[in-house]
Image (cartoon, rainbow, N blue to C red; front, side):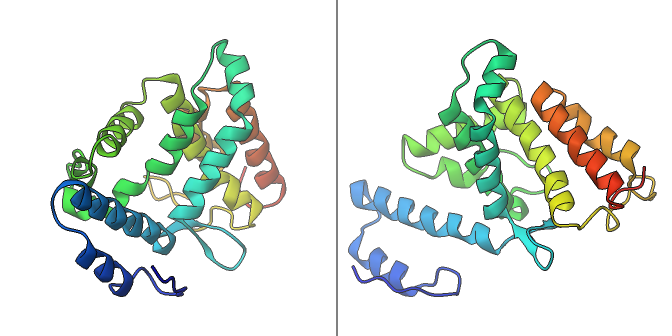
Length: 216
């Protein structure tokens, strides 16, 4: 199958050609759904987050998910030391990569959320695994899910500090500017699950205050 690079989002050309070669049923139909899901995940590059990736552009959801996986991998040994038990690194990496995929279908799921139908439509074992991971992340009961949720909460603060963006574009629920106390209220409920995450957050907060990016 010929490959063609493009700066645009996945188009219909190559994917339509693959559809003609694959039927809707059996192994060919399963392969079609997997190919379509690959194209769907590529669109995470197009979705921007509120925090910056560099001083001049916003971070994409794909970049965010990748960096969550890297941070979880880098700190995995520290997390195990704190927990006093083995933690499933493979599961943590999958949770990082999966957790924001549902945002692409948020409009279709409605205000009440609910289980992502796209996962359920995928062939087994992938669809079943993604649904189980999504439930685990949302419930936040396992050590792996709690830690990934903590890294997820910490990451935007890290990027706002590293890129010099600060918090001037954010306000509290009471429409007040975000200061160090308000940031603690947002971050600590999630990052306090780990001494390492809490220490890293406190370094980010203090550096941001010292650098004039966050009011004390």
